Length: 359
Image (cartoon, rainbow, N blue to C red; front, side, top):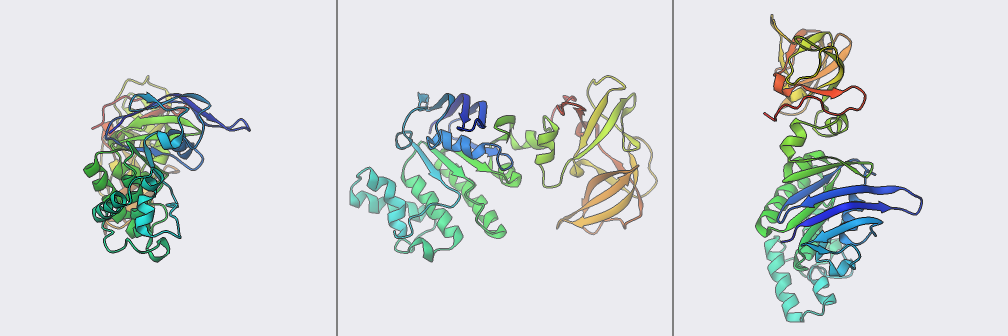
């Protein structure tokens, strides 16, 4: 195992674009670490810079405490799985798996033994003589992983390896990948734009935007307490409700009602109020106390839940309810939320103001 330390890293293209902009990051030994962000945020460039496929313009990259910033890719001790798997179509599965060993002039008998052992670990038995074109997408993904594992790198770098799979196979591969990483104990950096994958797989997540690190934390921390409105908008299968509000003595005035809030934001301050649909409770009977009154506009089926959009004084607020409990459109409802789940962001900067602990 080996940790990764990045200090002041910048990757600047000839046209002046800073794909990675002054980034500091530490990935611990054996950690499953996700780089998450929208397309063009710099996450793949950062991964390729760690691998040595992109040159660092500024800063340092250390793997296992050794400075590898100017080291050739093949001498960094990293193994990489690309988005398109990058398998050699004219080679068999066994030849693809052992190609890194062949480059290092490892004996043929050792290569064959490694191919059989690695193929067995990844349920590729019986496929060693096939070529990539004869394999399914999931099998090709496992061959790419087998090749990376067989190379015996200190660090495993994964560039959106699940994006070419269909939804069902992606879920199966996600479970398989997490178990594999736990069994191997190898330090892994995983790039994805799919926040559900990052939340499900990672020990910690780094959310990136425009080459900069916007939040670093565990999946629970990033989901429950986004540090700014960018992260709040990006994380979550249902978008976080973000609406303008004003802090009052009773909590925060928003969408024609009042929600309770923890923290010490001055009364009268203009803020952006954030609360996830999953943390709101919808009732259809008489209700009193802090909350939001509104009228149901539409309900969207999400499977075991439904996302109900409620018009609260002209602001649409989303709330999730159990399946088959969706109120009819036009029905008056009342929304409540616990104070610990209501977040306040600065109206101008979008930075988190309320500093409550994650419940």
